[in-house]
Image (cartoon, rainbow, N blue to C red; front, side, top):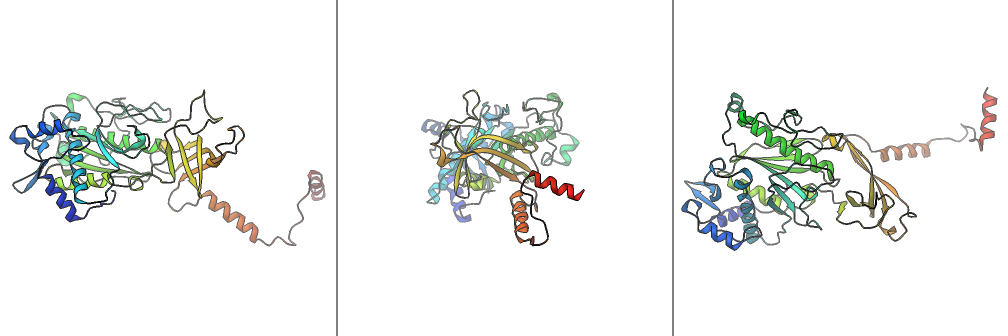
Length: 408
């Protein structure tokens, strides 16, 4: 998780303020606020209440599985909870800069350079992306929701209510193609068993598969990402996820209401984290517009994602991906190679400027880079005692042919 910028005392002050009343924020208008205040008594007078020494969010005083509406409607109140937490944090501590905001996705398929029909239920978006687009490239955390309404309980549910944390992502791939990517080299498919026979274990597994798919998609499409996050809600149980090319980590679950202070901690960590703490490589910047025509353009169109990459203090603009090896695997080593030019050469005609290859490697622990191996070879050549041990290299082909005749 990103580091916490508030102390325990400050987080306690935030929780206290949340019990004192609602406040306006970007995703809660004055009309919506008045509507909350005018609801029946079970809503309460503030976002957070303490009942019998236990906390509960007033929007979820009735558990999600017992509320009317679909998953996205029921869990849409999380957007207000997130906004209330952010506003109270800003009141408690000066100098905080919000970098992320939670939005309910509804039924939008987010734009991406790879076709992806998956629609995450909730999305933590960067507020500092230059183009402000609602897309996969600025998605920091994907949230998935399950109400567990009408699900049957099986023996597996009794043995392990936390099923899904270590599940095989490719399981059940013959059951549905709802989340299949159209790339030829990708076989990730996410599906559920027969809807009429769904168990709690089935639904938890599906939630896990969906959030893993979303995290995988972020990592395979955005070359800037070093890791990403996810959150799953199953009724009132919450689980945190971390994904990188070495491992997936799933937390133990905690309760939406009784562990409300933990949700405050989690949401405030994401809201004020830096790009680097959210998994972005600061040496790479995604460009929102085509900076310059390039001979690599196809039918007048720019290549999908373009980046400004800093190498040894020099900035380069990518124009094409020459290789993308291993990104689809999700785990293990990965190599991306970009064709690029120095940004300082942007005024030179595109057909005449010098182009370079920039290689980005994910190596196994303990492996040496090709550059390190090359440097070692050259140093050994320099240090080797060549004098008096070897003949002079032939100056041309005729001299080489003469040497071969002599040796024969």
